[in-house]
Image (tube, rainbow, N blue to C red; front, side):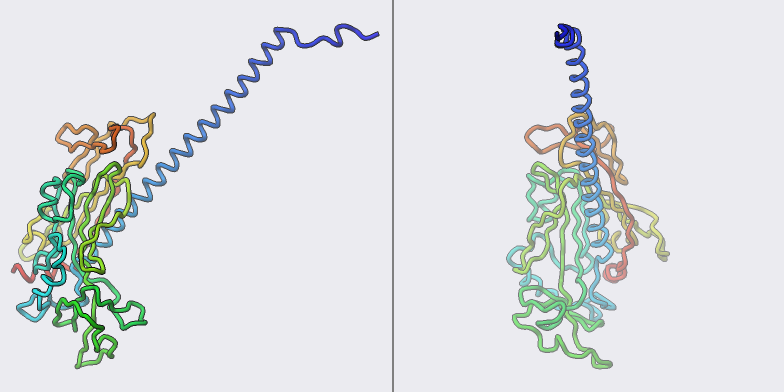
Length: 344
């Protein structure tokens, strides 16, 4: 005979206890899953900020370290050999010069804390409506290594680009319809043959059409300034030029300026570069109330206290919901001698 007690089910109390324990387990697992997801999203957010910030800083550092490099030219002053035939640039950049012109003593330019109006006035390729107000514009002109070679070489000459033709003591900016016959000739002394270095002006600025981004205007193969997105999430870059004000100069910066004149840039010996990067996506659980100091400028969500306001150009404006970080570096300006020659 089977006992009634041995066949009975769970009592109501037991069922309720089991249900509660089961819900607790489910809640614990769900909490751990959501926490893991949040941590993963946070790690991904910070890793991307780190990557974008380092890339932007390295790009600007590399550009400024090579500013005004003219292929080993011992002088860039056209009155004493140097770079001649400067008028050729009017033809080279005739279709779209974007405010970029090779002028001795003015091949590096900086606009600190610019507005869309001032940025567009100086460089007409920049759209004033999409320019991020309160950020910098930087023009750097130079040639890039290695020198060009004949077709089939490591860096073949292109008839659609502009080049500096130099033998270290004199040079000219040119555009050639054919590969020069002397481009692969052997370099001999004292008959110094020419070398050809690609001319590479570039304008850096911040564009904001939803996600603020570092952009570059560069001279393309069609000899027009082409806009290029470098990296997203860059809200600000700011450059302070260290100027040696001593006479005679001792190579040590005594003053830093973000809007130096051509004469002051002639004595610039280094540059401090600051980059403010934000996360690309919002964090609904975060509220940014920090003040970010970038040299002689400060930035803050909503502004105030003499700081420039950080805003969000996207449709739903919540600038405080982004994480931010400042990156900085100091770079020596290797080629200030060239600029100084024109202004003495």
